Length: 270
Figure 1 (spheres, one colour):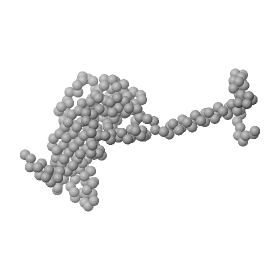
Figure 2 (tube, helix red, strand yellow):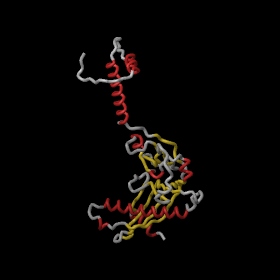
Figure 3 (tube, helix red, strand yellow):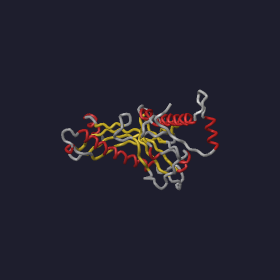
Figure 4 (tube, one colour):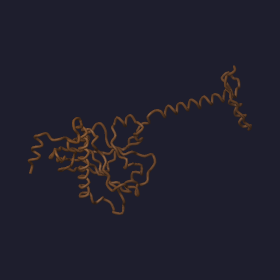
C-alpha cells in the first residue's frame, strides 16, 4: 500500500544494517525496515505527548517537618499614631480612610515591636562573631483605637501582638542544609497549597505555632531543591519583620475602632 509521506534513512555501517535486519519483522512474519522505523517514531510521539500532559498538570507540593526552632513572645501596650482626618476622604471615602489609618497603625505597632526586640533580645544567644539575622514573625495582631482629635487625625489605643523570633545564624543555616529560604518566608492558605499553583513553592516547611486558631492557612518557609549560600553580604538588616499585615483576615488581625462606651472608659483611665 502506498502512503502520502515518506522519509529516507541513510547509513553506512554494517552493524546498523544487521540490527535493522534483525528487528524489522512484522507480525505476519514479513520483514520491513520502514515499518520498524515508523514504530519507533510513533513511540517517540506518544512519549512526547505524555510528557507534555504531565507538564500541564500541577506538581504536588512536598511538605517537610515543621520548623520548631523559634521562640514565641508577645508585645502589648498603648499606641498613638497620626491618621488622616476625615476631611481628606469626604462622602464615600470611609473605606479608604480606614485602610490608610490601619496602615499607619501597623507601622506604629511595628516600631513598638522593634523597640521591644532591642530591649529584650540584645543577646542573640550565639557568639558575637557568628553573623546572623533575625526574623520577627507577627502571627497575630489586635488593636482597639479611638480618634482623640478629629481635626488633627490623632488616634490612640491599646494593642497586643503575638510574634515568633527566628534567629538564623550561619550554624543554623548549615544545620538546615542551606535549603530553607528564610528570607522568603510567607503566609500561604492551605487551599493554595492543595492546588499547587505556579506561585506555590514545590517544597514547604511550616513554622510551628503554639496556638492554632487559624484553620485557613499558616506561615511557611520555602524549601529549595539546591542549597543556597548563607546571605552574609546581602542581609538587608539585622531584624526583619514579616507576617501579619492589614490584608489578613480576622483569624490573624483585629483592628477595631472603640465604641462610645469603650472610648469613654479608655479616655477616663489615669
